[in-house]
Figure (tube, rainbow, N blue to C red):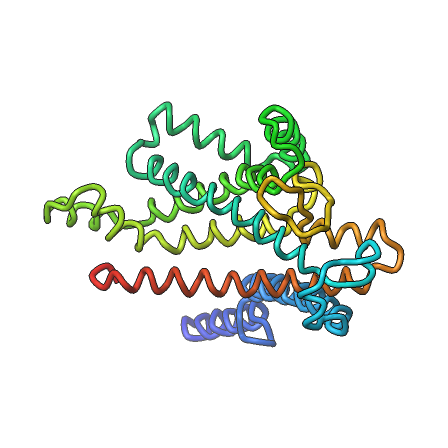
Length: 305
């Protein structure tokens, strides 16, 4: 009687296991569904990126030439190239990074290494950064126009645009770098203290290389936002497409140039696609260069690696 009862339970268990497993990969249905959702999301995002890049590449590659990269735009951007646009973009991004990187890394070090989670200063700064990170770019544009262009008397200039972008980039850069420093094990700090290293030596030789992944993430995200920003630059750096002579001149960035060609200039779509392809290519090259330099810097500290 007991043997027949055990056989019946065994058969029921096998039937239940057969019903609970997916016929595709022998996983339980719950795991199969979650796995399918994850891989489906990855496939959707990858397909969207490939579709976007392929559309830009196919539509813009025919316009790319050496003359396009080295001549100034003519006929409202329908003809000519983007030489002055590239110079303006490089100057704007250079001002942005020159201001945001020292301030961002310094603030991140202050929050991660010199203030506790319970301190009033740290809580206020972190709350301010979270609020700033969620502010729309048009608000930064109006702030930059009112403060840098009018109050400080900079006018529509590359300097005004770069400083406005720095205000937008700082929250992302600070929070990413701060998390990078907080992710460094406390054993690093205790070992440095046991060896008698100063705070400066510990930060430069030990903690900064170890926190480099967080800094790189923040830098890449901030740089991507700065290069691709449009609204903030329309109200600060302006529309002028001539070659800038100094940081006080007005200059048109690539993102503003693409917007103007696509929305305001009839027949400007081919050059808009070509400019977009150049912008995406620059983003990829800059990301690869920053990642390579950061890894070289981290590996140069052999005793940290």
